[in-house]
Figure 1 (cartoon, rainbow over the protein chains, first blue to last red):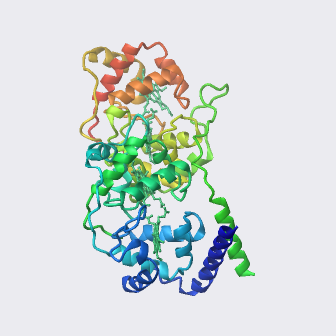
Figure 2 (cartoon, rainbow over the protein chains, first blue to last red):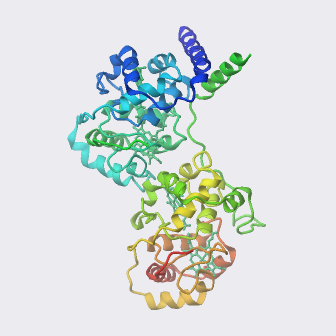
Figure 3 (cartoon, protein in one colour):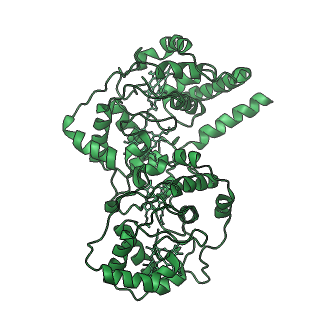
Length: 214
Length: 233
């Protein structure tokens, strides 16, 4: 019940945000410096100043595509992607602030990811590059890029935190994360546990220093 | 008043987001059903065919297909993923639309081509992009042991529709078969013979009805070796 009340509050704050920001809607390009101020105030405890992952199952945000970050924040705010923790923090951001924070994280330096089980990398690479025709898993590289660099349409995966990747794959397969037009739900649902564990390690091992933002 | 409306929208969205994995491929009547008409007019296909296609948008939308059909549209012979590069746009459109509608069974591919991923117009954009890609230089061929018979069968029963060089016919929705992967040609020919490809052309089913598996292997090997210099217009 208390949870419901909090969620309602978040939704309501979201509404007010939409309305108050409406006249400024034309401003879509984010300013990384303004974003830095907001991030330091609200996000730093969990996403660190350098955009790495100091807490378990928390995503690295450094060098993620700004378009993807904006979409995720708006999805949390609107309830299209649900997570108690993030929903509450994003609920307080306005339409004007979201592109600034996104621009800040998108511009951060890349810090290589952490592989926790190198013995899985070979299987992980095969899943990532070839998929599995038997069970209908497309190659991850098809959408996320050969090196996990991502695009305007698909998130960067290179260097992502292993625990976070595994948690997202679990949520997709269980139908708990549904803001993906069904694409990742289908992919995750077709994967064996061994394939999922391995591909998460391989993703953590990928290093892409530079990506083009449109 | 406006405030109430906006907030209501947000609440409905939040409520509607409770889990549901993507719907399975639907099933529409096909060749097994009485009164089946091959390539019957339908709205989705008419929209796609009438659309003034934009190949550069097609290239971008094609991203969701690359994980199986490869970035250059060459497919994978070992995985029975067909080569799409250089296929006629009309054929590509019909096949995508048939999978969406459930006239051609392909549950593995359906979630990636469904109408909530790709619009009818984007189907046409993808087809325009793929049809102008060069036919990839290498493909999977058969064993090469029965090519004379393969050629004889092809010229007798198949060339009338698929063309002397396997070039197909864009206006008639007849697929290009030249230089397609042997594994895929063999697989589809058997499916069409046995009634498993439910969007098949009944005239073609008649043509291939009496074929043994060995006949199909021979003719598929022959088709996989046909090569046309230039991609279709």
